Length: 349
Ligand code: MG
Ligand code: ZN
Image (cartoon, rainbow, N blue to C red; front, side, top):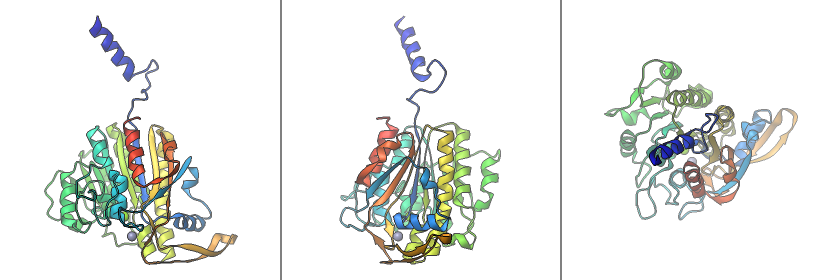
């Protein structure tokens, strides 16, 4: 009798009377990082796009303090580690704290809870931002070690550049090196739980020189793949080259890369609207270039801009959130709190 009651209780916990999933259903997480995407980059991208951005859809907005353990001006390794692993560390370090202890990332924690995992980046997949979710190394420049750690990690899908770091790989991934076939391959009956795709060229390609595919297509194809598997997922999507436009002090480079990223944000917003049990976060690891818009006209939204540096700056960056648990992300907090809030969401606290 007791066993029977326990069984009924279990069934009741899993399904409510209408057969809907209960609040215990794991939350999908889509974390989108515009590398070097400060408010001025967003503003420039918005005006260049006729005064529109998908970010206007978002419900909650916060501000993140980006400094690393020692420097007010962070790099992408320390800031990536902060939101991937929840600890401030030194510039250049990936997935380790200030005492070189290895840290677990939110991606790995999700994986251990039965999530599917994915990484999409418009830089090399071994570059600092994506690597902070799977690698533990003293220096972000240890590309061979990072590539090996990606092979050893159980990431289900990745899309990015950096094929040269994987020439001798010996692992489970089914690799397509021409991402142009992405949709065909993802949609085909050819089934593999581990898929990796490299962009059609090395990632020094500018978008406006014809980089394929665009980030929205890459995200859409990956979300379709996740949906076929019917499991919760964690995915990180990086608009990597907004940062490179900032380093180059080239406003057209920034706005074209922002447009690419903004297209992927639209895809993610639509996904959350159709799948409300999803948390979408869009943020940046830091600002790059000390960009300011110094003159402009509302007619056709043309403007002039200026840069303060060829490096990063210490300004706080915005955090936009949408969907389940989005409210947690309003306010002003350290970048490490983004990890804490994602973990709370995964643990349903
Ligand atoms: Mg990056
Ligand atoms: Zn940078």
